[in-house]
Length: 70
Image (cartoon, rainbow, N blue to C red):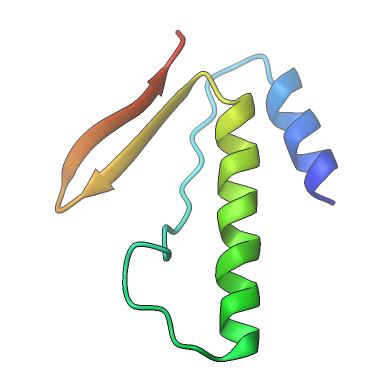
């Protein structure tokens, strides 16, 4: 399923805005299921960022440009 998403992003012809959560910056509970979710979301965020031209992290309403190949 992830490959379909990455392919769709790569083949997009117009502006596309994706909004995702970043949950790996805070305290992470030690439960196995929670750790697996945090790891899976982190891998998804990395994969999506790799195929996007621009990546911006928003923190406290302030944009931090992580990638800008445009």
